[in-house]
Amino acid sequence: MTITETEALEAIRSHHRTLEDELRVRVEALDQAVAGGHAHERATATLVAYLAGEVLPHAEAEEQTLYRAARTNRDLADMVNEMIAEHRALSAAAGQLASAASATAAAEQAGQIAALFAAHVIKENEILLPALLSDGEADLTALLGEMHRRTEKAGQAPQARNIPAADPQAAVLSLLLEAAAELARAGHGDRACRLAASAWAALRETRPELAVRVTAALHGLAGRAPARPAAADLAASREQGPGPGGREADRDLDVRDLAPAQRHESIFAAYQALAPGAGFVLFNDHDPKPLRYQFEAEHSGEFTWDSLEAGPEVWRVRIGRAGARPGQ
Image 1 (cartoon, rainbow, N blue to C red):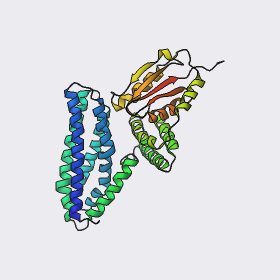
Image 2: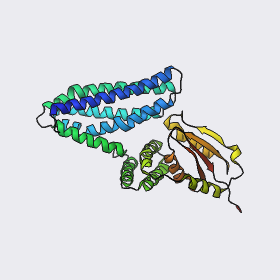
Image 3: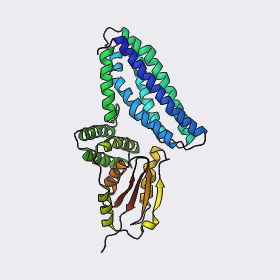
Image 4: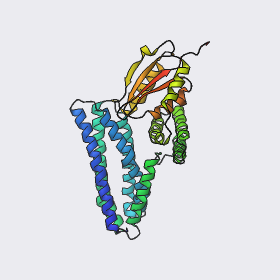
């Protein structure tokens, strides 16, 4: 069904309202957790996921469609540059929210994100879109269709947005993640995850901000990787032997109430502290498949992985440091 340009404008405004409403709901949930003295980490993680999965892909699609068309109008060029800068600010703010050091800092950051996005949407709805509608050169109906296609593609393949030429590592990582996404869509999910995890291992010490991007991408790629039978995990662990630590020494590591940026830090710190043969039981609120790929990239042959419980509410995995083999 063909729609008019006026209908296309209203469709874009309606989507903006949905994004703003959904963002506000998540910000309010975070505010309520903080005000009530409750754990805020899950609310923070939910808000970060919404920004990464919905708001930022939409922003990228706008730049490639609406903003590109608006730039041909001299009267709109400065506004377009300003709005692109606001997209960058939103992306940076999402990263800061993910690594917020306290509940108060998370709530303040979330409030700033909501205010920035609300002001941004007003400019788009009240100035940019009407100007495009009145512009005889712009086709809002076609731009809306292209924007939807680009939003869907961006959501399927997380990638760097407008990486400066002065940062070649970030530019190469962007290309690598695009290639990994293509591999996954072609049915090679396991290979795609191994490739991304290798990049993560290479970057996590020297470029932690890029490593965080790889971790986010891995969560998307892992959904296309085949599951591994739990029996294979247990067999591999038995080959390593129990070691001197013994399973009696296992402790629980529950990361469900930690902020996203703190989860992997806590898990790898716990692993580094293990004696040979010892382990801990990880409690998580989602499938830790991306984490396993990261362990394989950085500690291949040095760790054990026993799947104990696989959702749907809780995932439990025993992660151990391999013990010495007989005769060693």
